[in-house]
Length: 137
Image (tube, rainbow, N blue to C red; front, side):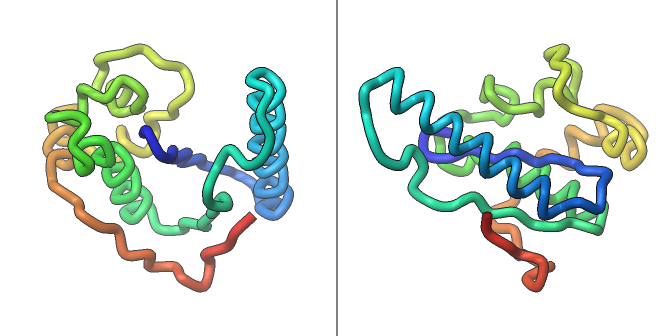
């Protein structure tokens, strides 16, 4: 996305605070490297990183769909498969990326076509169901 990015990371650990801290360190290190490479100073990102604990698999699928539809919602593509920086292409077999784990998708959908149909259901907004779990790092 031109103005932001999303990482949806499945973590099989109870050490969520440590993970959030390490993601913050990663983004801070990235900012420092970019600033050094381009002789600049200051923040690279406008907003702080937000993390959310998701415990419901259906909601996780909704978030996945929401993220995949982001470029479509802001009008930079006409079809979600057209955004080259999305994992959607990997999920539907149009690219052989190695970062994603298709286990949840394969468990929840009987076929790629079923996932594609699910992904075509337009989402304008995701209500954050777990407000008590919303945290910033």
